Length: 307
Image (tube, rainbow, N blue to C red):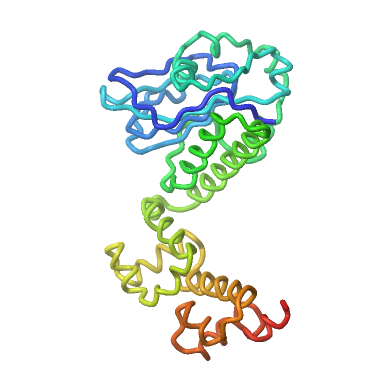
């Protein structure tokens, strides 16, 4: 089970900020650097102008700083697992104070830095197994273009950390695993996409979320208007969308509409024509054809099969 030992979201640090832990810490550290920063990678300083994420294993060097004294903002999570705690006798008592959390993150060679990793070096705990299984390169920055889901999950974990519920530890375990799995999915997805398309990932990710939110797809009848919102031609807009999500934008819109139509057919007694209009179809016959193409049933057949 993953135990969160300290967490912080979007802390703004003073000029001259640096984390200098050549021998790392005795637990895992996940950092989201939200501003331009310099990171020591393989003995060389590298400048990262865009937000990046770094997942450190135990004992990996953690050396990074603000860039040229500019404002530095980061979010961070120190975490470990019960099995590793038993091996190295690590004191993982929780402290709800954000000031204490910040101190725990910042202080070099104190509580975290002094933790011995000698007993853990020959032991592969469940977290390390998960990281290796997900093929996440550790100790190096990863520029992620679509950070929306990761940031949301980070804030959810932060909120849970400061709760005192009966199932707090179990919930934190699940939320941390969700965060790690999602990070791996986004990392591998973006790494397989050319960077010239990845720079559009955030804007297009927001668009795709909007397509699947509520009944928004019902009003999306003009692809040219969607392309104009991105200052693109229709052909280039459709090309980028397909490159990023491996599905045409029109297919996502249809899928969202049909999903909502299925819900209405199952939960209301509205007529087929009314449901067609709610879902953005002016022509009920067109709605019936698309519904059958997507589900294998006509709307009437689908409704009757669920009664």
